[in-house]
Amino acid sequence: MITLMVNGAPRELERNATIAGLLGTLRIDPRLVVVEHNRSILRDRDAYASLPLNDGDVVEIVHFVGGG
Amino acid sequence: MGIALETSLDVSLLNVGGREFRSRLMVGTGKYASNSDMIRAIEASGAEVVTVAVRRVDLNRANEEGILNHLDPAQFFLLANTAGCYTAEDAIRYATLARAAGFNEWVKLEVIGDQETLLPDTAGLLEATRALAKDGFKVMAYTNDDLVTALRLEDAGAVAVMPLASPIGSGLGMLNPYAIRTIKKRLSVPVIVDAGVGTASDACIVMEQGVDGILMNTGIAAAADPVRMATAMRLAVDAGRLAYLAGRMPRREVAVPSSPVAGMID
Image (cartoon, rainbow over all chains, first blue to last red):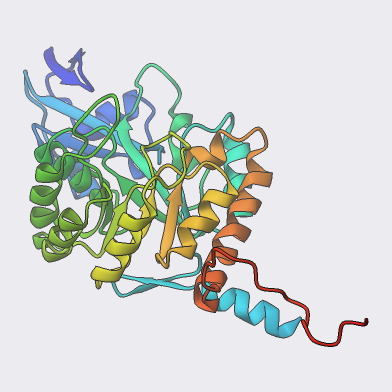
């Protein structure tokens, strides 16, 4: 297992985890969010399945909410 | 009536950063009691530009809190803000995340300097405006009603400057009409007053200064009946624009009779 920080909280994942797998587990529609991996924005949603995650990585999953 | 309708539509069109928008009224999507209230109020406002914020997905809850579950991005122009950012670095990060969502390269830039008043940090705002404009963003910069800062923001590449009428969420209306008029007179880019409008008369008076548009959120969302208030705001923005274009009569300290003085019977 590896431990990542996802949206500010530690989360344990399988060693071969990917962004696509993480979003699937969380039941998040990739089209409705933007993912930042170790401070770098993932612009290509097709790459979610191939990007490997490592122990200690920091992931931020954000979306649009109501605001002024 | 055909002429009146044409005139009304004519005053609504707004050009910013090379794009034409169908309304001079822009609205926020925050603080509504329910999503259905929000949608109905936005539709009543006639706004095309609607602002949204960028926040973490709450992983412990259903994904329904995302605004795209409720708002059709084909129907509105989504303008992401950087609300809650206190440094240029944070604001740039949020703007870049928003752009990656894939809708547009526009941002309503906020760099806040004080938690109590939510007044802008103008140094940070200028720094972020410069960096984002250079990176291809169309920056609409939320600022205070200071002329010199507004001029610097225009120089820094902002496509619109957004001075406040009064602090965010205060509903105090326009505190300094002179400052707003001066900014409008001196800038080439559109001036869109953002924040502080509390009711329809506030919106009308703001538009009568000659500014290009208004962005508001709480004035509609916190009204007892947001849909009615959104309608009132739409009419007030058009009324204020028309009154500005019509050119008001001069103010006089003495009365001038409207009826003929001559022809009175003995």
